[in-house]
Image (cartoon, rainbow, N blue to C red):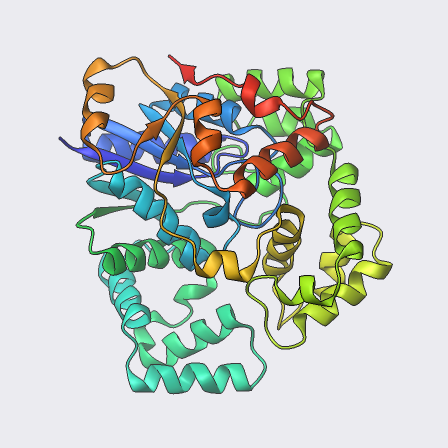
Length: 389
């Protein structure tokens, strides 16, 4: 059986996502299409605009057969670990093909870069150490080292989708999983402030929606996504950024030195800078802006804040096993598909009470944080139902 896998956030699901999924399905003609979806917190450490269930519904409407939640301890990570968790989850579910976007749709070049990063040669290691010693942050140092060791890949890792593409390929190499990669060229600008109706930036859409500029934003999403967004904004079932900031800053200001030192992905002095910024910042945006720069990328600071809010420590991540269960968010009614899940190496969980027994405490904490920021009850995850079409 040919099973296509897609790793996504879909926050919100827009025309670019729709193109990516339909083009992937057109090329592969799979028997089934599975999506690994970021849950309530995303890879950059911020809350999702819509709940995992709502985004799963959009994926199903676009052609997916099943949508699974990626555990949050793999979501709020750097690109390498985010990709490792997602690729492991999908391959454990029987996925044979993995589709992803890239600004440089050259599979040979991306694969060579992945092999270089996964099995570094001495010149690469030396160039990486030199770049770090010069004060570059790790992502920038990695890009410099790759450019020095593999000149044809110069600047490859300076583009966000290229970086994720290389990380997906690295994960497949590390796990020894024979996934066939399918590259869909990335069109449009990832960080564009203006909204391109065909290939919009998800961050630009979110900002427009939160400003009340609904016309421009809704013109860039499929009709089913637009209808859902309208309903959720009318219901005010959208996270309140001020509540999120208050909760995160309250947590940061209550932490002692040991708590700060226990945070994951710290570099020298980073915990002290974060502690100092938390005492004066009035919002998460202000805190992140005050620390972001050459050495500390904004996404890294945002992920640290998310980890603090969820109680995720470096020690917990260092001992974290690969995803050992799959929370089913939504599916199409296909008996032959669900019957095949009985033979998988990991269990597929379709009820939130059952999931509570298997999930990491941070997963439940993430749902509760999202609910609190939406002014919803703490019991929210247990009132959610698996979406079925």
